[in-house]
Image 1: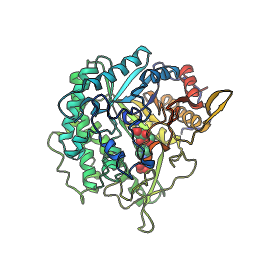
Image 2 (image 1 turned 60 degrees about the vertical axis):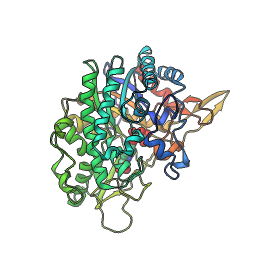
Image 3 (image 1 turned 180 degrees about the vertical axis):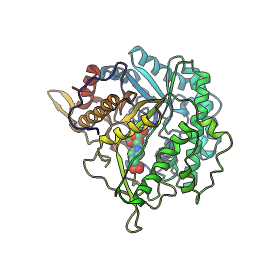
Image 4 (image 1 turned 30 degrees about the vertical axis):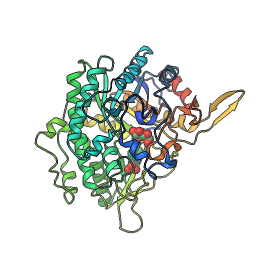
Length: 476
Ligand code: GBH
């Protein structure tokens, strides 16, 4: 038996990376500059009613123009690594063909600025900003998008592979497939169960083809990963078979639909039979699974909270999911019999429950199932209603809840390492307060506060604490 109680004494292993993460559309701004084409998130955020407050990523944190200052901020926080994403529409404005040199130059300056400061770049190729032209041709609902993604991966690998040696293909394909095409709360805002399943497969295919393209264009020795938002799902009544079956269904649709093909070369049988009333999966072509199941060094785990499910008794409202009740459509195709229950407090400002033991479960599961792969916590963090106070001319953000959240999850990471899990690093989500997708700027996840009127950055107390941990390499 393990215990999560008490201070986890001990020090992080040599080489363990303390990092912070962002994504292009959430921080960059400069949406129409230097040849960047429109993405599905430009279209979606400019569609009335889709994003809280009518917010868009047009300016965001203006990181595109404030690159040097933000790099200095990262150095000030003592980061060992920075996880960012590359905006496909900056590299290929229409998603195909012609390459926009100014886009590549921006990420070259970013990578070089990081390396000059001793910060290792970790580049994600796709964090949800599909070029709009590709959406117009069917988006992730069609397999051509997977091939276009591989072409893009080869271009970026060839241009930046001499200075970036850690690559992630996709961020959270579950969100792209099922929030983008199931519940429709994310771009492109489609609500169609079969399109969502097709999208999941084409994202898997894109992952595998992109890996092949990267290995062909990046010098050898680089490390490759995919970042998954794996779901930690518990049964409401652990002794009731129907509730255990609800867990199994959500595990299939939320987790094994990606880990199956990517890490084991097959879709789970139960997933295929659960969804048989919707589709015969004939969009999976001969050879696809071999293309998807490529060697991979690292699994990136994005973790925020846990879910509790039971069999729906057909009365009242079926909430479909715990964290995304912005839509009446479900992100879980074929799982209408599953009900998501509210989780007990404490919650973050997102309404997500705080449960560090979920991270423990996830790390140990991935370690057990994939003993040959290393692990990175590529996202973990919390939103709270932060405010800036000024005393003696000193701006300050007092956010003890966030420090506590980070500390408790880092304790779990230490514990899993002590138990043999090969966790190589941890990336706080996020470096900066930023555009929180359907919630716009109303939710703040940053280690650093951003004033959206002046764009001034203020390290929060939690950010200063994190810098200390990164320096001491211990939580003591
Ligand atoms: C990540 O998404 C994103 O990678 C990042 O861009 C984003 O800003 C950050 O987290 C904070 O949201 O109720 O079944 O949907 C996280 C998305 C949030 C999806 C939790 C799953 C709960 C399960 N995940 N959510 S469910």
